[in-house]
Length: 183
Image (cartoon, rainbow, N blue to C red; front, side, top):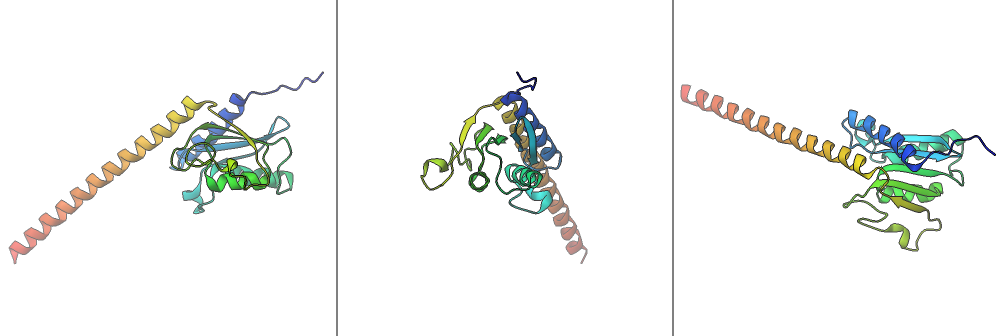
């Protein structure tokens, strides 16, 4: 009998959530991911396309890269599971297929770009020579709240920026009017 503790999906998703917190602290969309094999994290990543100036630097891809480097192989172990706080996009599903992930657990759906159940269902296409199982909804309330709060903050920042721009434009217009009346 093994004394090894078997962690739950919620445990691993909480670690992915912590990666998403890092992304949010960098003003990136808060998405985090971890890859687990043999009850250990072999790769972790957070969304970083803006800070890394790399459009492929999604949390899933970052975690895959780290895991593959850690195991010195471009293919993940047969038991590898990805935990990610948001449904993977088309690019990430492709990377997951190529890395030979066994299972994906994602927290919340992505209606615009999600490619497992939302906008597209890529694994149902019959196109891929490898498919993986997936589940959704683990820590959904927590991860959805994090994303909602981030986008609410982002919208408020944009609103304040527009107000500032209007104020600056009004000041310039007033200055120009004063200058032209002086002439």
